[in-house]
Each structure stands twice: as structure tokens, then as C-alpha cells.
View 1 (cartoon, rainbow, N blue to C red):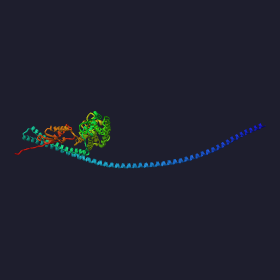
View 2 (view 1 turned 180 degrees about the vertical axis):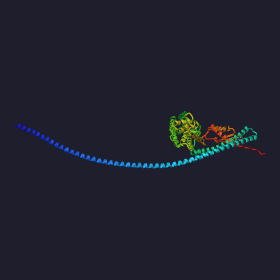
View 3 (view 1 turned 135 degrees about the vertical axis):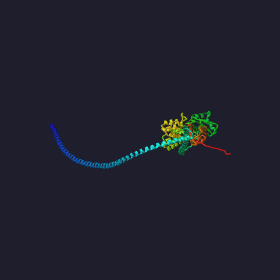
View 4 (view 1 turned 30 degrees about the vertical axis):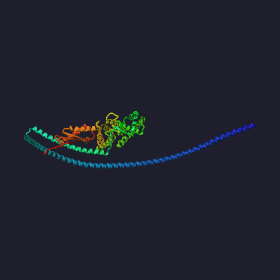
Length: 538
């Protein structure tokens, strides 16, 4: 019974479950159908809305495009009207100019017609004038021929009369006439040479005096004396023994380190340093002075001091060169050239300091170049470095012009500067106008009073050579070199030389002196002719 009841309950549960499942599925189907119907309705409504908005937007854009097209058409029509008006105005202006040009051409045509008529009339008058001139020319030729025949006849008659009066033949008379004419021409030539020489000399003197005085006024410098020895003072003679050292080891070490000769003699209070190289001499003098001040004098200390002084000297030389370039305003020099210019501070020639001489020549070159209308900066550069070879002529074979030119060529100096360096003593031909300027400025700097010294032997030899050249000229009686060889006074024989020939003699002497002698500056040649007549009354 119980089992049957349980089976019945189980069957009922299964039945209820099946019914529930059927009811659920049916509900789900109904719900899905309802949702689908609503979704379709919403989609149709949305599609209608979108279609309505799209249609409205399309109508708006179409209206906007139509409006834009109408505006663009209006603009194009305005632009077309404007261009049309401009073209119409241009055509009117062109037509006006054409009409004006035609009027001008008509007026010019009328003028040409008038001129043509005038020239035709003038041509007729010229032809008539030519006929008249030809007739007069024929008459004039006939008259000239008649006068020439009459003159020839008269000259022949006068010639016969003169020959009969003089008693000479025709050839003798010609020779006598030529002799007289030759004397007159020679005298007139001498007078002409005298006038030209005086005028040229006056003009040249004025110009050269102006240039030289202006140059010397703008620059003058002191010059040192030329020595090959330096004197180092010592506090006491006892220091001489310390300088020499035991068995001379100190002095030998010093001479070996510096390359100079040290002279320790009986002269009280000084030690002499001798060397041909001024740089080594200056280093040695400073090193010795420093050793004397320090008091410690032995080989190792000597080497240490000499090395220290050499470094200081190199720096000092470079500074002197740079200062010199700044003072003379020479930009762009190579550092090696600047260094060599600094070495010239310790180099002298005939007592003249070479660096100061280079300064002076640079300023003189600029003044002369400016007066002649040339580039003063280039001339100043040429004058400044013209003697750079003297800074190394103790170390390199050859003359200082060639040495300096080759040295500057290695460092890219311009051609004008190189030719001035190599040619300022006429060693090479001058290829630029700056070389003669450097030669002139060099001579002016060396020739001015007090600039240089000259040995007595060379001085006397130069005066003797100057007097010998003058006395060898024909007609010269005496010659005297005066003013330290700056002038030669020549006395000629008044019986064999006239006033006109004195100019020939002066010019020939000056030419020979220029060709045969070497001298700074210039030498004035003065020729004197004096006639003295003496009679005695008794």
C-alpha cells in the first residue's frame, strides 16, 4: 500500500514537472515574440526618423550649394566686368598714345623735309664755293711759283756777291757757316740743358723735401750703439775668482752653455762677455748678472740659470715682436715672422738698432706711398720686414735680402713684400713700385744725421774715391769732398770750359758716382767756374 502510494506521488511529481516545462517554453515563446514585434516597430520608427533627417539635410545642402553657386557666379561676373573695363581702358590709352605718336611722326617728317630742302640749298652753295676756291688756288700756285723763281734768282745773285766779297770758294763758305751754326747750337743746347736742369732740380727738390720732411717729422727714434761685447759689472774683484772657478771649470761651463767668450782681465769691477750673435750675448750677460746676484756659481747652477734665461729670452723676443707689430699696425704676420722681428731688437748695423730702423722705414714707406697715391698699408708692411734676414744671417749662409725673402716666402707673404725684401739692395730686379720706395726709405733712415756710424778707414776711402771720380773729368782742376761726403765741390778751368758745359760736367760726375759708388742718401755735385783777370799798374 505504501509502495503504491509512493509510486503515485512520484508519478505526480513527474507530471507536474512536465507541465511546468511546457508552460515555461510557451511563456518564453510568447515573450520572445512580443520582444521581436516591439524591436521591429522601433527599428521601423528609427529608420523613418533617419530617412526624414537625411532628406531634410539633403534639401539644406542643396539649397546651400545653389546659394554658393549663385554667389560664385556673381563674383565671376564682377571679375569679368572689371577685367573688361581694365582692358577697355588700356585699349583707350594705347589708342591715345598711338595718335600722339602719329602726330609726333608727322611733325618730325615736316622737320626732315625742311632740313632736306636746306641741305640741298647748302650743297649748291658749297659746290659754288669749291669752284671759286679751285680758281683761287690755281692763281695762288702760279703766284708762289713766280715768287719762288724770283727768290731763287735773288739768292743766287746774293750768293755770288758774298763769295766775291769774302774771297772764299763755295765749299769753304759752307764749312765756315756750319762751324758757326754748330757753335751757336752747342751754346743754345747748354743753355737749354741748364734751364731744364734748374727747373727739374727745383721741382724735384720741392717734392722730395716735402715727402722727407713730412716723414721725418712724423717719426724719429733713438738708436743704440753697435757692440760685439757686453760689460757685466761685479760687486768686487773677489767675484772674478768665483766666476773663473777651480781650475777654470765655472768659466768653461758658462762658455759652453751660452756659446760666448768671457773675458776676465785686470779691468776693475767688470767682466766682459764677447760674442758676434747678439741674442747669445744678451742671454749670457743676463745669466752672468743673475749668477753674480745669487752668489751660487757652479756648473749645475750655471746650466740651470742659462736654461731659465733662454726661456725668458724666447718669451721676451716674441713679446717684443708682437708689440712691434701692434705699434706699426701690421696685422696678419705669421708667428715665426713676428718672432724674427723681435730678434731684430738685439741686432744693430753701424750702430743703428735694426728693429727701430724697421719701424722708421715702415713709417717712411707709408708716407711716400701715400704721397704717390699707392697703398700705404702694403708699403708699410714691406718696409717693416725688409731687413728680417738680419735676424738670422749669423746662422744661414748668404746675404740678408735673399735669406729674408726665402724665409718669408715659406710663410706665405705676398709678392710685393717678397720683392721688396729681396730687392731693396738691387740684388734682384724690382717688379713692383714698392721696392724702390723701400730702397728710398731705407736710404733716408740710414743717411739721416746720427743714424749710423762708419769706420774711419771706409770713410776716408769713400771720400778719396769721390774726389778721384771728379778729378778724372776733362777740364776739372780741383775737387773737394765736403760735408762728410754728402757734397763734392768741383773747380773747372775757365779757359777750357764755358758756363754751358759746366752742366754737362756736373751731370757726368753725378752719373759716374751713382754707377761706381755705394753710399747712403744722396751726394750733391757742385761745379764752380770762375774767371779772374789780373793786371798791375806801375
